[in-house]
Image (cartoon, rainbow, N blue to C red):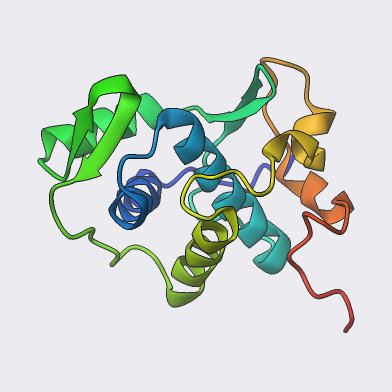
Length: 157
């Protein structure tokens, strides 16, 4: 695993808030997948993740390690509210100052590709998830071995 990957809580919270503001009423599992694909797609394209979050495989899903803490901080700061059934709503405009334009573009591409939480592509078949056992962290470098339907990098040049 790449030991130079460092978790950035500001970027992670900005990702969560931005996704919630764009998608409204997403549940945890939909958010997990959008966050996962945003970080891992960005890694495939630019060889570094957006947030550096550690995702762990749990029951075949990518679960971000710092998710609950980030949600609690966003709720505490009055940026989002938690609704019934682990759904969320944005209460303020997300602060995107910690994200670059390329990072925002990848997040937008993921949101548009998954079509507002209707899972048009499933994380279960993506190689980083397939390589990990339940309870194990997902390896960012595995994106370079993705099958074509998951790959986002142009390897033509």
